[in-house]
Image (cartoon, chains in turn cyan, green):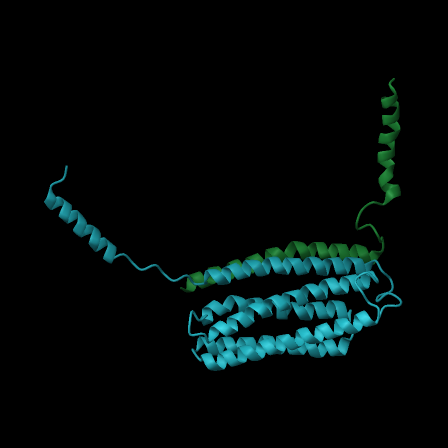
Length: 208
Length: 68
C-alpha cells in the first residue's frame, strides 16, 4: 500500500504528462477525401466495365450504327461537352476562391458551375426525347440499348452529384451549420470525375 | 446392366459434344479478328486500371504524408 505523499507525487506526475502530451497531428488528407477517392475508384471500374462491354459488342457487329437507326447528334453534343468541361473549370476556380476565404465569389462561381451542369443535363434530356421520337429506344437494337445504358448511367451520376452539390451550395452561405471549403472538396472531386468521364464516353459512343 | 447406366453413357457422351453445338458461351457471338482484339484490349484495360488507380492514390497519400 502506498502512503499519501507518494500518491500525490504520482498524480502530479500524471498531470504533467497529460499537459505535455503532444497534440494529435492533423491528417494530411481528410477522411472525406479518402472515402470519396475509394468511391471514385469503384465508379471508374463501373464505367470501365460499360466501356469494355460496348467495345466487345461493337466489334462483333459489322454495320455500326445498325441499319434503320438514327445517327447521334455529334455537333450538338460537342457543344454540350464544352459546357460540361466549362462547368468543371468554374468548379476549380470556385475551389480556389473558397480556399482564400472569399465565400461570396466562390459561392457565385459554384452556382454558375451548377447552372452549366443543369444545362448539360437538360440538353441531354432534349436529345433523348429527339432520339426516342426517331424510333431509337432501349429495345430497338443493341445500338440503342448500349447508348441509353452508358449515357444514361452518366446522366444518372450527373443528376445525383448535382442534387448533392445544390444542397451543399445552400449550406455554404447558411448561418446555421455552414459547410466549409474542406467539407465541399469530396463533392467537388466527384464532380471532376463526372466531368472527366464524359469526354471518354463522347468519343467512344458519338465519334467512333 | 441397369437402364439408368445404359442412359447415362449417351448423356455423358452428349455433354462432351454439346458445347460445340450449343455455342452457349455468353460472349461467343462473334469470331472475328476485331472481337478477339477487343477482348484482349478490354482484358488488359480492366486488369491494369484498378492497379494504376490504387497505386496513384497510394503514392499521392504517401507523398502528402511525407510532406507533413
